[in-house]
Amino acid sequence: MSEDCHIVWKGSRRGPYTSKDIELMLRTGAASRLAEIEWRGRLLGITEFLEESGSEVPPPAPQPAPQRNRATASTHPSDILSLRRARPARGNLLPVTLFGMAMAVLSVVFSPWLVLPVALATGIFLLTRRAGVHAGLVLIPAILLLLFQFPRQLADPQVASTQAPSAPAPSNQATATPMELTELHKSTRPAVVDIIALDKSSNPQSSGSGFFISPNEIVTNFHVIGKADSIGVILADGSETVCTAVRYLDKDRDLAVLVTRKASTHQLALETSRIEEGERIAVIGSPLGLDGTLSEGIVSAVRKNDDMIEFIQISAPISPGSSGSPVVNRFGKVVGVATMIFTEGQSLNFAVSSRELQQLLKSPPLKP
Image (tube, rainbow, N blue to C red; front, side):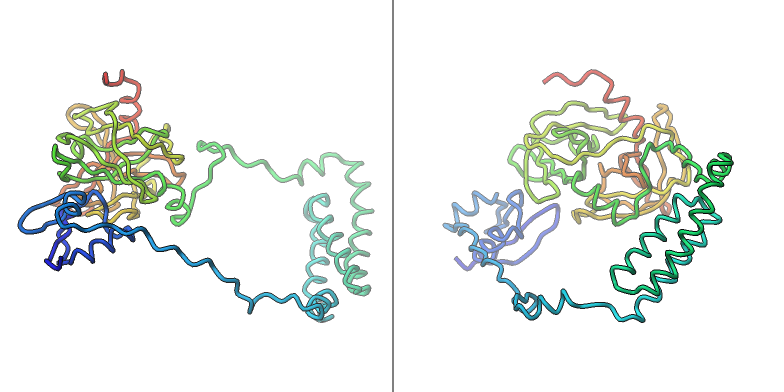
């Protein structure tokens, strides 16, 4: 068959393609099985299209085994012996010697039990390199200072207490430390999914984002799945599953918690402490179907509507398709769920607070 076809996916229309093109895209994963095919004036599911067009999806071609790069590997005996006999030039040891001497001198200012071992280790390293003069320049002052400092520490215990490093101040984020955006994206992205709302004929109605809070529970917005007859879920690794139940549904909070057939090993934790204005946040979702999109901003304000439901105003840009995306702080904890934007202004984006999600999770779940 050589008639032109179009792929309809997440509200967009791509093409034209031939049936062979579509077979290739299905085989390589460039086209999703949740997409539809526009052919001869009709919208068909993938299965219907393949049956009516007489096409079939061939199995993926076997991947060739990776070949070893022999240019970077050498097993010649002469090469191994040359590596074993290699010694750094005597001039290369000068920075090491200066470092060791500096450590020995700094032991007078700082605790000798922290600095002197570094100087002694440096001197021993120089001895293994057969640099006796360099080793002596480090070891002699280190040993003399050690003999001077040791009696002083025993005679005046307060010296050790005043020179000991102070303990770090306790953090309200337990032992967590703020992450850079690259690390934050890597740790958060595997828990974020695409949500596809389907009608009775399995045609896409709307799409949004969501994230796992437990192995089989996904959080998204009420307005993403409110009118769906069935719900498809695309995980971060590209695999697909379906929603088997709706556990929580709250129209006023615009929240929904779904149960999925396929479990995930990646989940996001909810922030339990107070959300501060000016706190840096990031949003990971699928605006306009562009999955895995990361945007950064701050918490502009924390507000409540007429129903006393808490929302956070954020400066991170969101778009249609971002609904249900997690809004996370620099510790990777969810502070909100992206829900709406005000198009009349700039950077007027809103997320329902994670506190509202925690309150919803405390209520009785929906009956199956």
